[in-house]
Length: 349
Image 1: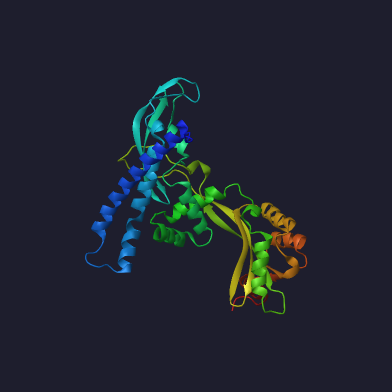
Image 2: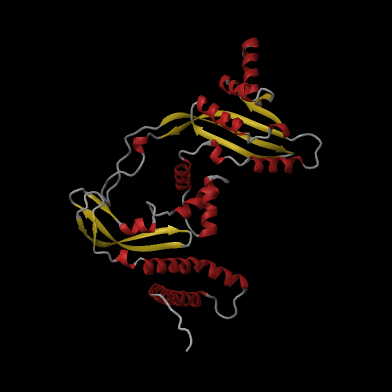
């Protein structure tokens, strides 16, 4: 008599679960194939036409697959009739379901989830959102990460255009700025700086084939920028179909200070590290001190040059941290000062 294979109940359930999910995914794929069939040009399409058609419809497939997986694997939460209040433990009855659309890198995903509201605590919650780890707002974390990756490399307008072209997801340049600011909030200069190994690699690339050490420039400056107060941030309550009232706050001017390290490579520059914030000159000095103490700048393999205007606070920090660096007054401020001296000496022409 042969040995019988013992299969646990959990294995049977898992196999049945996956079999059912595969069937639903096949149904989604068949629906997408119908769309593809009607969208393809008649006759014998070229490779370019096939590629363009599939690319246009790609997110309808990927979002459908993701949506089907979510619906199948979280059926209990989607049809949950009751739950205890997270604050007072009172038994709450489900309301809804409430519809919600979220944007992900695989496309728009529609969610149907129950809503629970506690009259005593005056607080509501969507348990399915917590289980799925859905972030607040329509744009989800994977899209936010892609937006930040682009915005840290190119201007916001360009980042918005590239994200739309490459992913089919539209995020305005203003939203790009907001997302980047939220992600960067609380980060220190060392958390956003490249490693010493990466900086040394860039130095070696610029130094290849040259006798002298490459020039590493440290530029420091400050500028006043308009900003809105914290009280003006966030959404304001109001009724739909009614024109919003004009904001009653006025912007304020604050000084943004920052620095940037970059290598000179002929007619171009090679970015190394930058740090720009609305901050005081003491805070900027502390950030420079962190860079110095961490040793991420290989001063022994470069010729360090510092360029800035005539502000005393700039050269105070430079002299304290990089006393051996070549100090250069930028051309435009130098010309401005010479003009003032000439005017004081000789008067108006």
